[in-house]
Length: 635
Ligand code: SAT
Ligand code: MN
Image 1 (tube, rainbow, N blue to C red):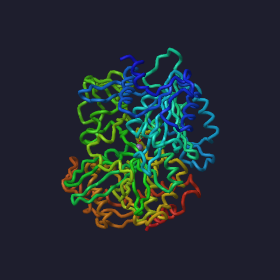
Image 2 (cartoon, rainbow, N blue to C red):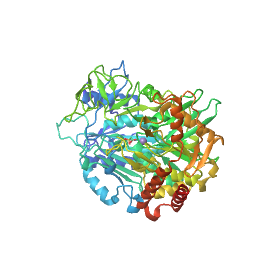
Image 3 (tube, rainbow, N blue to C red):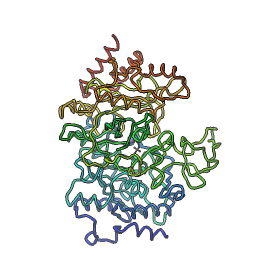
Image 4 (cartoon, rainbow, N blue to C red):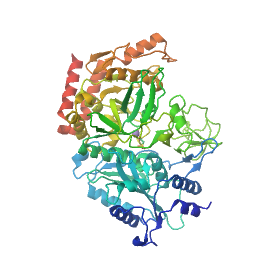
């Protein structure tokens, strides 16, 4: 089929901006503010066409097919991966760009010391200049989307304007897109305005490249929390471009949540059912690429336990009529890290991505399938790597270093509904009542396997003190420990000290005993033999103790840093570490569950240091908690 024909089919509501007079155009909405905003942006960017997305399967397929024709997508072998496509990004556009991400508030202090800041007027002027004519030769897509089930009291509606068909099809998977959202919006409903352009206009007759984007110094991922707007320019990748995700569901939502008295968090949501059929919903905040998707879909290695998924990345939580905190997953898909995902590490993710999935920056095998490092199947003898080059397991770069076939931040975008362990209630508009929060990160030393907060202030302290080794999810140095409070460092939509204060005020909104119990976990401790804990399906052993603690059982010792399980409190039935005998593992468990006093003294110093940039804005309650733990460690 010719490109033109496909485009026509895809664009039932496509209008040629020059030819069509506004009055003659039939819009799929009567929302005048929305129509005006779309037309104004189309004019500014000089888009060739405007296409209002209806979110249908037909539209999705037609856009995917047109991307195959343009060379932006490779269609995978339908016998191996039906309905699947592969995209390869530009080598410079492979992850979120935190140093080009801005929280733009009138006052600098309101963005806080962890965020890049430029005043709204100045940033909007710079970006308006960049947006001028930036969609020449391209289609402007209007994506009405709902974060959360349409009509849920916890959901929010956004509209993203973008010139990236890649963004459209990913948004269709990751959020609820289309006419049904416009219907919900009515003629004057509130929506969050999200602007996006890849920043690569086409001259007449100019051939497009597979992954258009702008150079790093022209990329801007900007948030205006005071007016609930998102302006993104220059990148087509993940959280920089799929604006419903980190930009709306975390940065803008965290700011709205503070104003409205709820929580928008970088947390997975799972449903845990015990052998006695008791159900607990648990959320967990780990930084990007630290195993949230794996935990959310875990296959427990303890008989009788069941984990089902509600969400793998973001939780929006509101206090319900009964005083408990109820969580929804605002997303409808998974944007998961591919490398390291295998039948061993996450069989349910592997089953989720067998069909209707978009792969980005994975390797392409000669039989039209995908491959990545850590997939648990032998490397193909030959493949096309993520940069589109021939690859074999022996390929080395100019310095003789082995070349990876997939980029370390390669991703899969898959519909949540395809997950074989998706919980029946994952789309419940009322959300699910949360029994426990876990915080965590990659910490090779000091931090124990699991540690329970003593009270709510201690819980907030724990979250504020979280840190992790950095990963490839951000374009920066990988493998150094950085403080990542609440796993929100890249996602705070306002001053992080005010965010801590917001958390501290939760017991003013409900009975503190109805709030979730809070734990800190660390699956990543290392010794000379490597990882001290198997992680993955064995994490159920920690979750089992968490459930026991929620139910007022579970053996624990009180220590200066929190309640630690007694060495026999974690169920180790059937646990096998091929590197350690049972006796060695006993010793390892003791190490994993004891307080490394000297290490903790340094840890406390590092946390105190991380509070310093906030000055007096950091709540006194947290500083007092820090001093209390410090004193207890010194006893
Ligand atoms: O690119 S995303 O921000 O969506 C993924 C992540 O960093 O978690
Ligand atoms: Mn994330």
